[in-house]
Image (tube, rainbow, N blue to C red; front, side):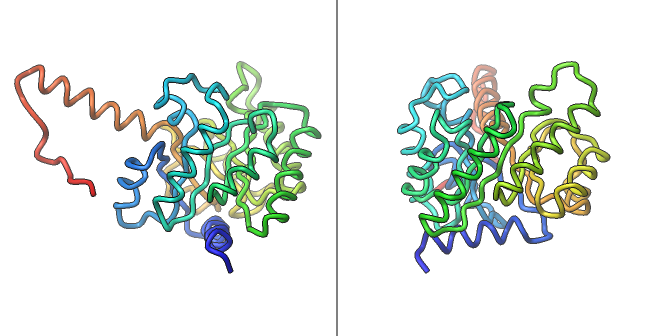
Length: 258
């Protein structure tokens, strides 16, 4: 088995394992090395918002796709762990973008549905999984529905019904897992897991969602943190600046990085 094929198989196994997979997202090689250096890290995931911001681009597919792929490839080349990439909505060519990502060493991806018609979004999922099959890897497509992200003031029950419909369509189209970002409550998570099956739902770690132990108990596959990790890092940087302005210096808790 090739190196990339073995990484794809391992990433899929981590999602299928009843133990909750947590991935704190990275945006460049040094952030990846910082995360890898923490014991217990089993896989990496990139954050498109964070990568775009690091190059001065607004989120929302404003960064050139080749620059995004190059950056994720550099991260993949810097580790033996499997890497999943946030590829937004696919930059106008979801299947082609995933093929490029696989060529760069990526073995999983988030793909936003951006609330496109369900049939169109499911067709994108099917095309991506076909590309993965052609490339000979277990590609962990984390098929994302923006039902809650774009809910506005719609009734929560209607939003949940949309997420259920879309998630089922993406699973039927071949996606191994479905990503439903948003501040979901215990009952909503339980409904999604019951509908999709155990280890088929992934979430984002936002304030207000159930505790990680509870999500594992419910059967959630994975929790990632999107741009939150970069915000935490930049908050620490600002706090250092504030401390220097007060006449202080670096905290004694600072850790060395290789």
